[in-house]
Length: 477
Image (cartoon, rainbow, N blue to C red):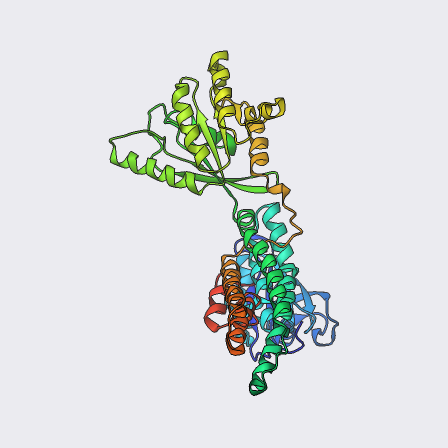
């Protein structure tokens, strides 16, 4: 952590809890005059002589008028979130009370905070690096156990620590090569080229693992997209409603009712899933319905899991054609037979053979046979029969629980792009080492790699970058 504080002359204020009527509201101030400003309007203990991390009961007064009874929490800098003086006022959750206190303190000299300004000050004062600050926003937005774990791991510095280790090693070699430039006429070599190559190979292995983790990290952060596909009238909308346990999609016996995608979310086993009900896959002369079918194919290719819903009245040949198409996409899928009460033994046997023939693992064993038939489920969406079993199979297919969330996972597209650029720069270093090239070119490429790593943690920043990141925060954080 940096010991250098960025001293700001102003004190900011904002509501730190959601707007609207509630049991309590928390008003937050940060800045050099935070304690003094609150002390002016607080009737209770003298806040200016109280210890940090203490809470005090009293009233907030505008002159002789009592606005509310409150609890005031003190965090004396640098032992605070922003490393400045921070005060949090817990009031009753009346919108009138909250507005009155904020207006009173603005009159006393505070100013309204910008979005994310508290966390920006924490970053500028070395309390958090940039990737940790972004993780704060992810933590606030997390709505599943998985996204919470990823955000917590990053906020606690796991990602930053790994990147810093890489930078430290590269900085050493960059310094050695820079030293060579000072002795250019003497043809000396301070940076052993073979050791440098070994280091870059080691760093690239770590970069590759981090880049590869983005797919899992992004899914855990934003949810697993699951497409419900199939012919019209097989019960896709009914299945979506059954999974969500609410009437989210319109259900009708008229073919082609769903002409666009319908999406909603739910938590299964601590993971957030985005279920997408699509238009039925069929040939149509209706231009609007045709557009819906086109979007269905687009969504299918973007999915992490496909639920291919079929009707026992469909021809097995037609189902086989569609399953072959899904198998070629290399996306996990489940064949789910709806209206299970209409299934006969002949249909079930034929469907099991199709699944077995299309399985990637085709060895003739009992275990493999069981594995392929596990890809077929029989449900009744209308009667909600087999829905819980389907949820378990969805979890098993996605298999995100196999990922150790204690490992560093990349979940931010900005970080991914910077890691990819770092990898490209190091590839150029490797090419140049094996060619008769001067040290200044090597130094330039290593500096470029260091620059991109520094962009992630905030050791390299621009005003535009900071504005882009912190403008997405809520006011009060």
